[in-house]
Amino acid sequence: MIYIGIDLGGTKINAAVFSLNGVILHQASALLGGRKGPEVGQLMIEIVRELLSQTAVRNETVSIGVCVPGIAYSKTGTVWAPNISGWENYPLREELQRAFPRSVVLIESDRTCYILGETNFGAAKGCENAVFMAVGTGIGVGILIDGMVLHGKSDIVGAIGWMALKPPYVPEYDACGCYETYASGTGLALQARKLLREKSSYEGVLRSFPIEEITSYHVFDAWESGDPIAEKVLGQAVEMWGMAAANIVSLFNPELVIFGGGVFGPGAKLLGRIYEEACKWAQPVSIRQTKFIATALPGTAGLYGAGAIAIQNAKTFDAKRIYYGD
Image (cartoon, rainbow, N blue to C red; front, side, top):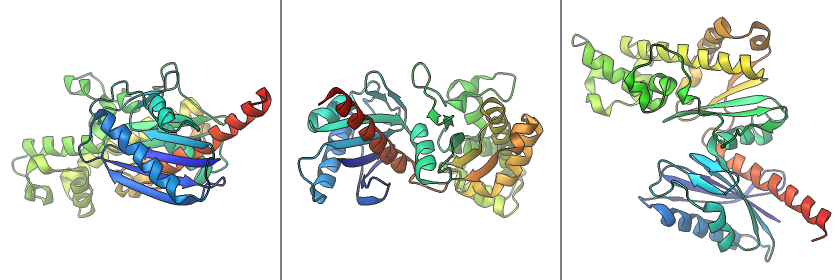
């Protein structure tokens, strides 16, 4: 059996051949370069072929795990990926199985892959109860409880960018939800721009950039130098991150809450403050049993999670084959 993990991002595909114990043996990547619909699927197929050409094994069954930035519908094998044009209900599993007849394919959302990457090969290895809070352009959580990843009726578990944390409801929450509006990477930039427009007397670090070009990285850089707008934006985000984590801790009683994504990163310096905020809101016994940590797999949690899926799916496939006598 050959194990291949594929991490599909909004702009790039990373893929690797894994050993049974999770070591990357071969790796390949490619930029999407504006590709749409079936062009992205074809690029993924080409990368898998490239990886297979690098292995010494021939005519083996291939187990493919795929991490996608959106919703992976487990019943149909189709994918909704909002950053890729034409992927509203894209038949990815069918396409990969048609291209590689000797394959088993399992597709999961990026948040599911993040938590599986950490629990199989990262900071949460051996944990049966852990949460991965991915804070980047948006916010989502992968949730592992009693050794099982939660999916829900329509595989949408973990879309906590919509968590209600700051009433009253205002129209700007319509696009991505309350939590994301304030505490995602996009939200941090949005809040900084609003304050820059409101405070005409402000002459700090952020004023040296065109307002529409401000990103979360500018906010973190300004915060490092003591900028008051950056401190206000990140102070508000710390409250949101802490409250959201407190709700998760109270609901699920995890051993770990792992923070990752593009914002953590630089946001890892705020984990102490986030934990203090969470302690105000969370169930007191549960929060004392929980550690807040940064990801051990920055930038690669999705790829390792896809590898973990490929390995586990292969074991399930082999068990069924033995049971049914195939």
